[in-house]
Image (cartoon, rainbow, N blue to C red; front, side):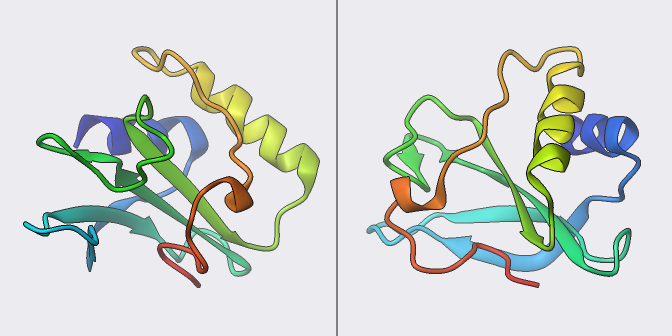
Length: 113
């Protein structure tokens, strides 16, 4: 996936297709592929998950979001701002923003550490 490759290059991480698959809680239940990097940092993991599969959304509260880039683990607020700035610098990325997890109806991370 080109988006994962571009993020890898910009952030110097190694997102790779994972055996983790996320089911939408709908019928039919599409499976959303996950690209993860759990090795670049000892105290955090990165996951890139498409929010759309055909006409279905993984997170219905985010209908205009193409991808979810989840960071799990230890991270400082200024690091989040820096990562968002780096992602915005990738050609083809129109917007990148931090979403408060409480805004979406999800009790746990998509890809916990």
